[in-house]
Amino acid sequence: METKYAPADRSSKESVLASNLSLEKIPYLKDIFCSLSYIFCILDQNRQVVFANDILMKTIGIENISQVLGKRLGEAMNCHFAYDEVGGCGTTEHCRYCGALNAILKSQRTGLKIISECRIRRMNNGTENFLEAEVTATPFLHENSSYTILSLIDITDHKRRAIIEKIFFHDILNVAAGLKGFFEIFDTIDEEEQQSFIKMGSSFCQQIIDEIDTQRLLTQAENHELVLNRQPLNSLTFIHQVAKGLCFLDEAKRKNIIISENSVGENFESDPVLLRRVLNNMVKNALEASTPGQTVTIAVTKSDQKLKFSVHNPKFIPRDIEMQVFMRSFSTKNTQRGLGTYSMKILGEQHLGGKVDFITSETEGTTFFIIL
Image 1 (cartoon, helix red, strand yellow):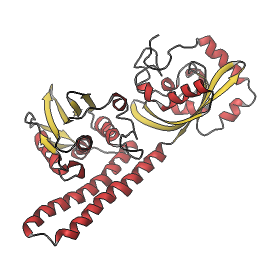
Image 2 (cartoon, one colour; image 1 turned 135 degrees about the horizontal axis):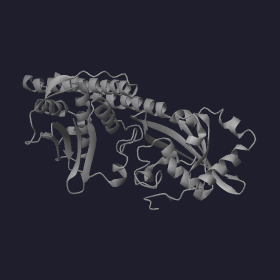
Image 3 (tube, rainbow, N blue to C red; image 1 turned 30 degrees about the vertical axis):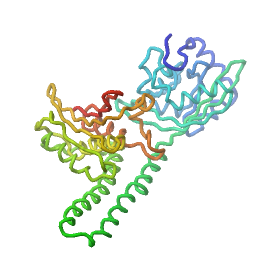
C-alpha cells in the first residue's frame, strides 16, 4: 500500500486481538493504567492500538475497547487528516509534521523513550477542535513482540495561558509603549501635525482594545459561549473600514494596504465584530510576511450568491509551513504565538458559517480568504 510518510502495513484483526489478550494477562496492567488521569495506550509494531485505558475511551466517546482495537492513534482520535490517504493515519503528507507519530517512529527506530509535543486537529461530535498534548513514546518488549507504550497529557490550557500571557505582556505592552511615546512628543509638534498624531493615538488605543477583545472572543468561541450579532453590512464599505483601521500598525510601516479595483459593493448580513477579527488577522499575517515596499491587497468578489473576502500578499508559504497553518499554537514567529490563523478557522467557520482557506504559489504569492 502506498504511503507519503510512515509505513502503511497493518496487522491483521487476529494479530491485534491476540496482542490484546496477551497484554491483558499481565498482572495489574489494566488496574494501573486505568488509574491514570491521562490518555494511555499500547501500540503494536504497525502503530495500531492493542490496549487502551478508560481515559482514551472517554475522550473519543466509546464504551468498549473493541471499538478502538486495531486503529491507529489519529484514527482513534478522529484526526482531521487520518483518512486523507487509503493507508490511514501516518501515511498522509500532513503526518510528516505530527509530533505524536514522529515520537512513535523515533522510539521504534532508536529503542529509546521519546518525549515530544503534538497538536491534533480533530472532529468531536461534528465540531472541529484542537488537542495539544505532551506525548511520551516508550519501547516495550512482551513475549518477544515489540510494542510502544504511548501516553498523551493534555496541555491545551497550559498553551492557551502561555499565549495569552505573551499577548498581554508583549503585544499590548508594545502598543502601550508606543502610545506613551506619542504623548511625550505631542506638545513639541505644531497644531497641523497634532491632528495627524491624534488619529495615530486613537489607532494605538484601538489596537489595545482589539487585542483584548480578540482574546475574549476566542475564549468564548472555544467554550461555545459566543452569541452572533448579525447586522446589515455593505461588503465594499466593510473592507475599506478594515484597511483604514490597520494602516497605523507597526507591521504596516513602509508597506501598502490597498483595495482591489474588482471589489464589489454587495449588501449582506453577518456579525461585523467576528468578520472584522477574521479579516484583521488575515491582513496582519499578510503584513508580517511582506517586506518594505510590498503591497497587501484586500478584495471582495461575488459568485453563486456567495461573497469571497480575500487578502493577498506576494510572499510564498513553504510546504512544511503550509501543512500546519491552521493548527492551534503553530507559528512561524515563536513558540508563544500561533492564534491568528487558528482563530480565523474557529470564528470564520464554526460561528460565521463560512469557509476559511488559502492558496499559495511561488509565482502568485499567498491569498487567505473566507467565503460566506
